[in-house]
Image (cartoon, rainbow, N blue to C red; front, side):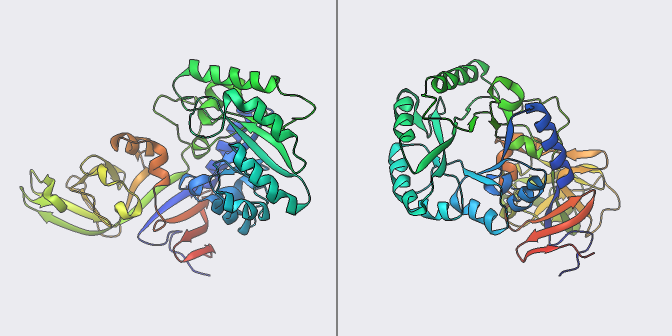
Length: 394
């Protein structure tokens, strides 16, 4: 067991506030009323840590988890997660048996996979649960809508595979309301036309985070919140009108300070030149940690409760800040890249807009070199970093 200083470990860390995660989950639960919830925790829970997020939500009685791959599902099972896990993306035919061994629910998005799954399922002696994806407008994966009824009827005849869920994806739920409403109408029409005696799925589901808050007619039996669980919006156009809180802050420390003259060039490429005598702080974080290089000379950080600009090109391991106007800044002071310090705040959404990307990419891009420090009621309860996982012993 390792003793940790102030609940942090390493040169850069992300604090994950599990009490806020629980609060966000309860808000979503109240929004969807009787619908069950599948938490999307693919891509390491969008960078927040899939195992810790899953453990927290499993203790809250969540119905299901959604992952993107067999490997993500196995990681959860090996960590002791027993809740149902749906693999939302197509998997390789060669991975079918492994998925079944770990009690992972595959998604069927084409008939060839279903036939391969059926052959493997015979070895297990009992029916295998699957969810079937219908393409209602994403144009990515899923049974083609026009042929879906015929395909579903063929699947329903199987003795070894049981259709426990049918779902579809929203490509523009945060913007194009008319298109999304048509998707819901088409999906429900398809379901109504299925033979009730043969196909009786437990779950019908379409609603992602935007669908949950903007399209309540899409809640059905199950919803799939992802980004909203983490207190973030899918796009700047989405306003949840609920008290969802971001559950992550990204922090590092100052490792060097220096005073330079006017007309001094900073960092690779000399993309920033001081206009005055300046004090520059060097911070131990960079694009090697997942902090986007495109934020060079664009973004701010927070030092001692005040916003300061990032100056010069962001390096693999270091960034530079102009701290000229903040007295008393010293080596080892904490720098907040995402999150709040006092009255000053830099949000993940702000970083995404300045990087010309989406907030999903900002959080899920934070790499494995960044320790995750899990907090509950402002106390560190566990840490995950490159050295492994351990309980806080401070």
